[in-house]
Image 1 (cartoon, rainbow, N blue to C red):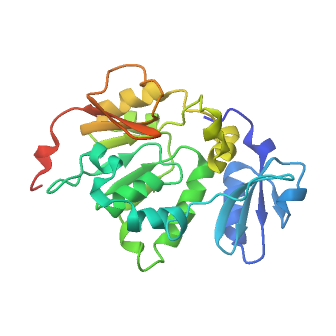
Image 2 (image 1 turned 30 degrees about the vertical axis):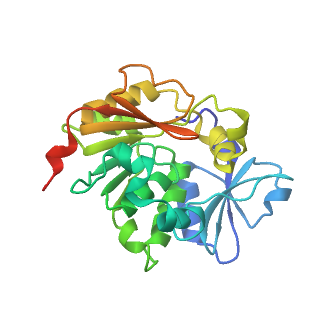
Length: 271
């Protein structure tokens, strides 16, 4: 679901040390123009660039004063810090999906984004399937997972994560039986308050991906294909997704997890 013509909005650039073949492949799949090496601050024709450099692809906004590039990084920065010091199974997301002694559910993240929440769950032992419908975001995530598989510390976690670039509603609807013990959803909330808009990812992804206006349909599809529960992450003050009421809510300072229980996860013990 792209609200704009991506060909008019995004171009591909290759810097020194960048993978020209990967850049060309991505551009060809989406019908995008390849510009060669450009400075984002001086680019005027395209609002966004996918830049391939020695570290892989990054998405960047063009023009003066634009925020820096965004990529999927599981080896350093905030994600790595959270892996080491985030609180393990005491984290709210772990409680929401039902992780506890003797129970490690298999989880499908149907709104994978840059894969941070999926990585947290994989670091706690969950086998993860990641669905991401935006080919732009999926390209960043795929490259991030490739880099993670080359890291001695992170490779075992990345090995638990499988990415599928597909529309989650279509993919779930096409399955003939349950696909995961738990399905996890974090739809892009369309009406963020101003403080949330400062996030680089939101600023970049919103014009390219749009809001998840079909969240209710996605929740319905997830409830039909999960074995034990569906978990929906929301901004703390956001309304519930329209439809069935959650069984319970876990609330933090900025986020909330709405849990829809289908049956007890105790059935996984010893499985």
